[in-house]
Length: 110
Image (cartoon, rainbow, N blue to C red; front, side):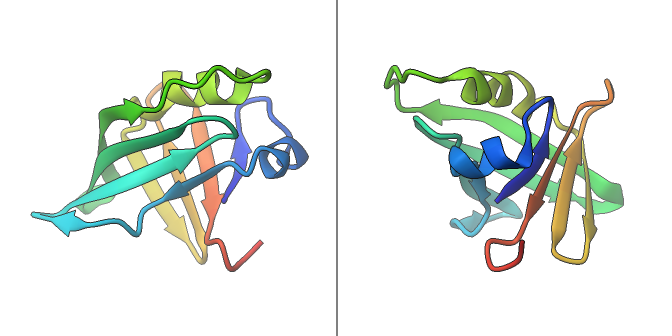
C-alpha cells in the first residue's frame, strides 16, 4: 500500500487504493510488478540491485478514462524515474535524484 507520495494525503491514497505489488514472477533478478492508483491497472519490470539502486522499466497500462486521474498521472510521470530504494521494517521507499519519493508499507501492516 502506498502511504506517502507527492502532495497526496494518506487518506487520498487509501481512498484510491493506491498500491504497488512486487509479488509477481521473478526471473533473472527482475520482478514483474503491478500497480493500481484508482483507475487503471499498470505493469512494469523492476530490478533491485545492491547498494540501494533500483531500475524500473516503463510498463504498460490499461487505458480507461476515469473522473479523478490526478494521482495516477503523477505516479506514472515519476515512477520509472525512481533510482534508489531503502527498506526499513515493513516500509519500502523509492526515490529519485530530484528529491521525489514514494513510500509503501506491506499490505498486512499499516
